[in-house]
Length: 309
Image (cartoon, rainbow, N blue to C red; front, side, top):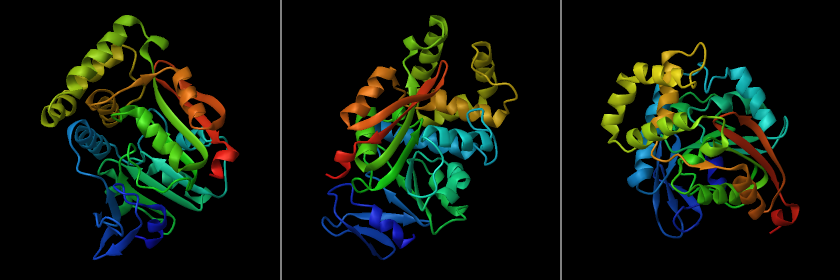
């Protein structure tokens, strides 16, 4: 692990400072140890319940996705252009947190525009991302939980979290954590409440029913249902209007895991999310990149008075 990363991290149990000790990180205050695996610090408490299920399903989802393939129907160049739109324009310096980085493809696209990028994911995808990391002096991967971030307060100039907090047990807590570590611009993308989308009622009921049933299955059963029955399930989605033209089997499986394998899938109105931003002293709030029938992004800037606290 690059020792530069230590200055951004703290103990998730007591918020104490960390130090290297026998290839692990150890809290100076409570002596809690954090394993470092393949250069990636594992900043997690013991996973259980729904959070453990989320870890399993997202690890499987990112195992299936291959670098270079389209993701959410977008090419690498399209995702790069969208990223700059999402955070309010291209930049040339600063420290970025990507909370929910998957296999680290975004980092490859934007590395030249930041001084430091810290990319975090709950899943095991971070280990492959670190293995393929060509920029170890400025791109650091961390395994962690967005609901209990292992980072110090007000330390990132940009905080980016696309399609993540709606899959967490308590999205409001997760949002507050993202705001806590942010000292500049914050962007999130979340699911839109079903009643506010253009989907007809029948389609919404089908989606919710499938997600409710499959999302609560034991993980081995989920793997069988999604990985081995992905084609017929994909055909159902096609007829419901949710399949993209030219989609490969691999791309479809990733979408199926994201749609139906997850334990948590919360939906929100734009007003709800705007209020979260206001409650956390974020200004210049903009609703952006609304994807019809699915979700929307929101962007805000930390109040200058709040930064000084």
